[in-house]
Image (cartoon, rainbow, N blue to C red; front, side, top):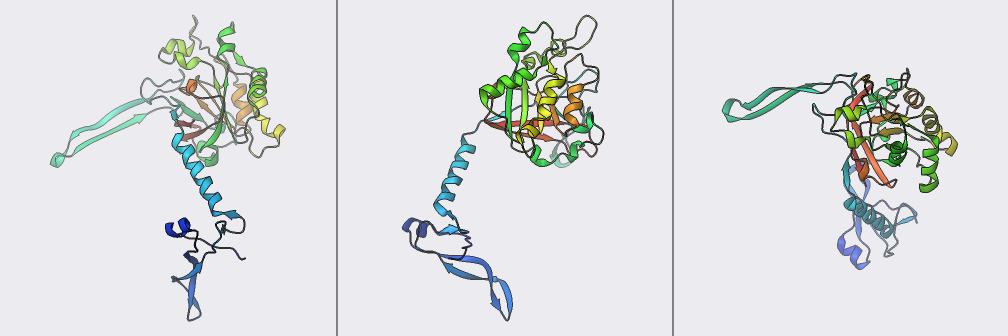
Length: 314
C-alpha cells in the first residue's frame, strides 16, 4: 500500500472503525495544471491501524499525543529568576538596575498611560553570561542557538552540605561532588544545563551576607573549581554526545568563587561555548533531575550577557 497523507478524520469514522473520506494534499489536475483549490478525496481503509506514512498507527499517535499533553498539564512551572528591580542581586562591581518613570497618569481623552525607562548592566539580577564574556571569539548572547535556551534538560547538583561544612565561604565545588551526583542519579543528559545549589540563595535578602563581605570589604561565596569546570566542559566528549553540557547555572553572583581573580571556571566553560546563568532563584523547588529549563535573555546584538527570565517545568 502506498503512503497515506491525512488531513483530518471525522469523529464518526474513527468511532465506528469505518473508512472515512479525507482530502489529500494534492490538487486536482485542471487543464494540465494542478489546481490546489480542488481536493482529491481518498478513502481510508477499514483497518484501525491505518497509518500515517508507512509505519505509525493512528491509535499510537493518539496515545503519544495524549501522554504528551497530560505531562504538560500536570507539570509545575517554577520561576528561577528574581524580580528585576533595585533589589535584584547584583555583583558589586557592575551597575545595578535603575528605573525612571516617564509617564504615569491620564492623558488626552481620559486614557491612562504608564511608561518607564530603565538602565542596568547586562550582568545584574538573574542573568545569562554569554561565552564571549570571558572567551574572545566565542558566542555573543544573540549568537547562542535557541535550542540551547528552550526546553533543555536540567539537573541540580546540591552542594549545600559541603558548603556548610567548609571552613571557607569560598567553597570550590569539586569533581568529587559531580561524581557523587552521577553515581546516585545517573549520567547527565546530552544538551543539559547543570545547576549548582549552594544554599547561597537563602541569603539574597541580606546584601552583605549574599556578597559574603569580610572585614576588608572583599566578597566571598561558593563557586566552581577549575577542575570541576574542566570536568563539565569535557563531559560531552567523554560520553560521545552531540552537544554535551550547554549551560551551567548557580545561585550566587558568579560561576567562580567570590575571591577569584582570574576566573578559571568562566574561562574554561566559555571557551567551549557553554554559557552561564547566575543569581538563580528557588533552586530548592527543583528535583535532582527529570525537569526542563527555558532561559529567556534579551537578544542584545553583541551582548556579553543579558538579564533573563528562567523557567523550569517540573
